[in-house]
Image (tube, rainbow over all chains, first blue to last red; front, side, top):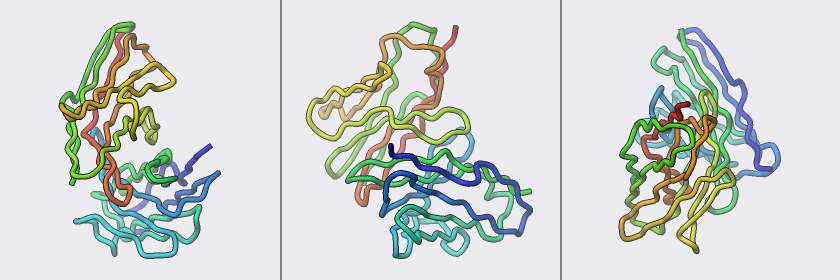
Length: 114
Length: 112
């Protein structure tokens, strides 16, 4: 149980285009999902907290107009990187909250912007 | 506010040897601690957690961690490692709104 999927697992896009990443909780409902960014050989940095039916809460320094988050249902949250640039290339990981303390992580999405 | 410090960025160890990965935390709220493991190009998998109760917690694959409030530590140990344990290990503490704060990670490399 408690499986979280991400799609796509790997994407290459050209500079200036937008990319959408999906995060789904497959066998449970998640009112809260989290989006992280991880650079090579570094830890995960929380980008935003996504609550179903309301606006996402962004961490300091994260551009909300660049990283659009939508949590339209209890099983789906999407992250759209708008007007992507090479510096946005990274590993993006989502997690879905269950209960008071548990978070289950997706397998990650590798974004490369050329 | 909470923070997590993992003192060792890399830990090489020979197969079947014991290992300890160190984690220290600071938190202004109730302490809930986690260890996650990440294999290359994958997401994180929960290894074990401390929420309350016994200060010694164990995972199904032989790892254990002990919550030490006086030393603000939550070190991860395994008495005998395998090649398959090679991975990145992250210690984390949970704060308000269920937000996890991660340490910088420790790369465990098990050598044959």
